[in-house]
Image (cartoon, rainbow, N blue to C red; front, side, top):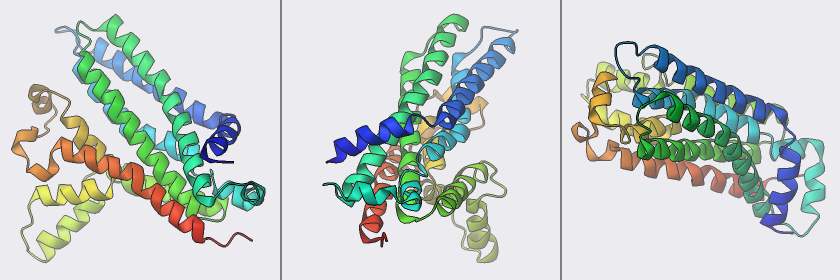
Length: 282
């Protein structure tokens, strides 16, 4: 048995998890509602698809991690608690194959659940807006998928280092709260606390860009949002009170954010492989 065999077996088991598809359908409905809001709110001129696409980014920032984490947080921990992992490991399959196979399987399921949202968004874009902005749409879809797979990697990593459903759930929920719901409010985010300590308490005068870079490194949601900024024209960024990329330091450019997002795709899985190979499965 190899990674391919683990993927085939896990995909057949995981696709029955209706909650993944349920969350994916809700994501699709929210995209449609935000597109409709932009369509109906543009009475003074033609509706702007770029605004609708920015809304799709915001919806994705909140709901895509939920889809990914729900799909993958029990991928290994659930089988360890039930004992079925012992049967899997009794076959010619390594622990590395298990982690990699679970990741590929759950990543495929999550990517498939996002296709519905992208397809509906594309249909609405053609039906309701004057310009499709194909390049912007395709780049957002690609970045959102990359973002989703980064959270799948985190969920599989968490699942690989925990031995029970409750611990895996706590780890996934805690990561979601700290990197998503909290980070969307700058006043209570972890970066706000870091900035307060460095600049207010210690008086170091650290600029905004270095702090933003820390946020990109430690938080896939921030890396995703910075990466998507590079997709939109400067005119839209001004209306959204967002800085244009050419006003930022080189290390907080959208291209750097894409690279960091790529690291989030790899490192949690590698950590999961390392820890799972050392785990005592009795």
